[in-house]
Image (cartoon, rainbow, N blue to C red):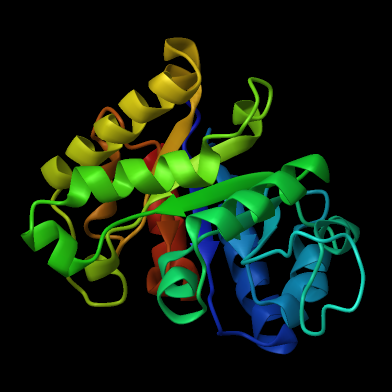
Length: 252
């Protein structure tokens, strides 16, 4: 049985004071509730220390939204995996569709970031997903498989236990439009088949595959009920404590 993984991606929202308040609301809202779900909060870089203080010594983990592949050097504006560890991070999101779309992220740079994060002892949420044009062209399977092979194809057998894969249909992120549970399941099953070819059947069965794309409190249960949907990478709905808690509860 794969442990559900619910991560809140706060994107470019919530500076330190707001982030502290939201993390405290989520922490207090979960206090005393019994859940097997792994919860990760991913605020923007300036808010990492503020959230780290709130979640310290709780079951809630801290994640970052990106990482650079070099350990140090003349890389203005970049943040290394060791810096994230020092800030209290356990997780990092890599290859989010918004970074692929707007920041020039490629499968090759995703692969370098993943390697650096894993080498530093971080857990990784690696993102894949197709655009609306690619889905309408019935190209989803090819796009997702290409991204998986290009981003994760060089991983070693021991790496997969520290990694989750987030399927994010680009056309469903921030649009209010959502993949149906059946559409999500179809791609998640594909992801598992590709992982089996890259690693092993046992690895494919063990790896957690999250859904990310306008996940909300009112659609989370149906998505999470699918056999190959192991959690969610939550965007806008994670910016309100009540909706984030309802999604966590829907995961079990």
